[in-house]
Image (tube, rainbow, N blue to C red; front, side, top):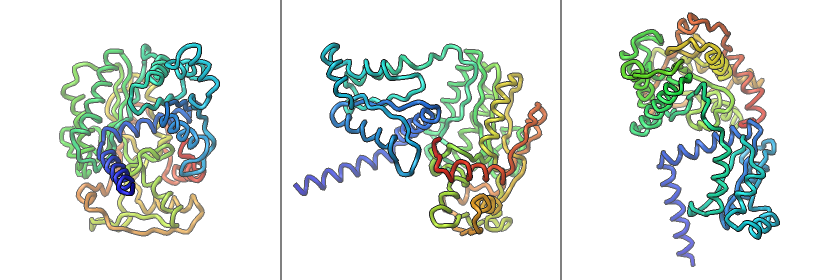
Length: 399
C-alpha cells in the first residue's frame, strides 16, 4: 500500500510539472481566470456541473467563490446544478438523465453568466448538452462595430518565439482581417518594448523599421506593426496601434509576474514592510534611479473611449504621460499613500534580465495631442494613491 501511495504522489508531481511547462494550457487557464473575473465584475454568476468526482470538483470550486480563496473577498454568486438532487431526479425521470443539466441551464443561465462544465472524459453527454445550451446564449457577433484587442503573452522573458508569434502576431492578424471584412474599428496593443534601449528616442513618428527591441516579446509586437505598414492589403475603417508604456492599475492580478511594480511593491510592503528594487548595473543610473513612464490604467481607458468616439483617428501612437520618473519616486508615492515611513531594499538584478533591461523610457506624446486628444494624464502620485487606497488596500483584486 505504501508503494501505491508514493506512486500516486509521484504521478501527481509529474502531471503538475507537465502542466507548468505547457504554455498553451497555461494560456487557457489564464483565459478562464480572466473570464471569471470579468463575469463577477459585471454582476454575473458562475454556474457549474459535473458527474461523480467532477460533481465534487464543482462543489469545491463554488465554495471557494462564495466563501474565501487565498484572501477575504465579498461573497460572489455561484450555482452548482448537480447539488439540487430533487430537480435532477425529476428531470431525469421526465426527460432522461442526459438532460438533467441542460434543462437547468436553460432555467438559470443569463447572458452575462459563466458556465463551467466539468468532465474527466470530455464527452459526458449531460455535461456536453448543458455546454451547448450555454453556447447558444452567447451574443452573436453580427453587429460588431469595434474590437479592442489587448490580449497577448506579455512576458518580457518568454523565450519560445513560436509561441509569441502565434499569440501576439498571428492572432492579431486574424482580428485585423475580421475587422476589415466587417468594416469595424480595430484598436490593438503595441508596446513601448518595441523601442529597445531607447537610443533612437521614444518617438512614435520615427521609422519603425529602424527599431531594435531587446527581447522576443518586443519583437512579436514590432513585427505586427511592420506587417501593417508593409503587407496589410485590407484595412479596418479605423485602425489604431497603442504603444503602451508602463501601465499599472486595478485588475492586473492575473498577469502574475508581469503585473506592474506597483502591484508587486504593494504586496512586498504588506508582507515585510519594505519594497525591493533592482540595483543598477549602469553607471549612468544610481540604484532605484532607473526611469519609467508610468501610466495609470484609468487614463488608458479614457483614451480608448475617446478613440471609439473619434473614428476618424487612425495610426500608431505612444501611450504614456510624457514624463519619466524613477522607481525611487514610485516607492515614495507608495509609502505616502500608505502613510508609512520609506523603506527600500535594493536587490541584485537577475542574469535573465540584465542584458534586456530598459533603464529609461519616456513617451513622446506629440502625435496623440496633434490628433486632438486633450485629456490630462494622472501624475504618478495621483495614480498610485487611487490604486493603493481604493483597490489594493481593500483586497479588491476582483470587485
